[in-house]
Image: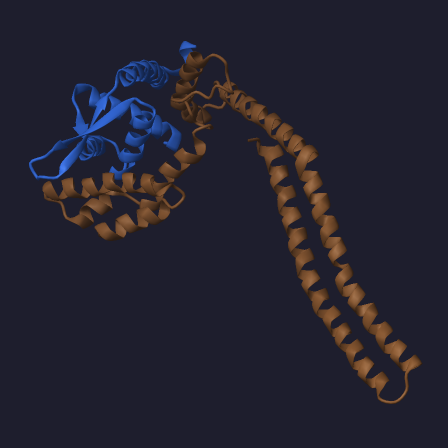
Length: 107
Length: 226
């Protein structure tokens, strides 16, 4: 996988995770790395970029441990972007599936 | 690698960023270490799972440098007038493009054409800026600086000939001890001219190196665009 591709997919995954509920960084990293082979740290540049582009906002919230945690939440713009990316992804993956499962004779 | 080693390596690799940005980024990782501890992981385990600090830092630094290049989320208005289609188009690009090289006959051409078109525009802008700056400012500053350096070369030359003249004049026109005294004076003038010459040699070299670097910079602007 090239970096650029990974980046796009990661953004989609992060946005999708935040669509169900607000989460903090460690949580997001843990959910992503469960299935995708990336290092935990990769999540933070993605979060920061999404936040800079106004797709996410963050707020601090106390945790049981005492120290406050930074929670991320989707902005309306982020929701829009998520549905755009989801559409892209579905179209893309269905095309890949088509090629994998029957290939080019359908062309 | 423990927590401190990870954070200091990351901090070092982030040095192109401003201090406040760096602190902001590091605080995310500090929180991550804390959350890891609360989940029963050792600091070494957390650092290991986070990955290579230099690699992570590159993502931030590239972000800083490349917002123009890969700004699919932030369409660059100078590239296209219609922002929304561009956002869609570039989103497509980043999802589809990397897979395409495996199928060279598919749609490799459009993204490549688009990207070269993009760099073509900024290259034109680069050339225009370089030409304008040089015609109105750069060339004149260079010219006057070159004149200054050239005229400063008069210092060692004058010292040298004054020294020679003093010696010759003293030998021809005086007798007794005076020629010796004046000759010594002349020799010291020549020595001074030597020192000034060495100084001018380094100054000229410095100047030429500066000019070369400036020209290279201009050439790079023309080639790669702004």
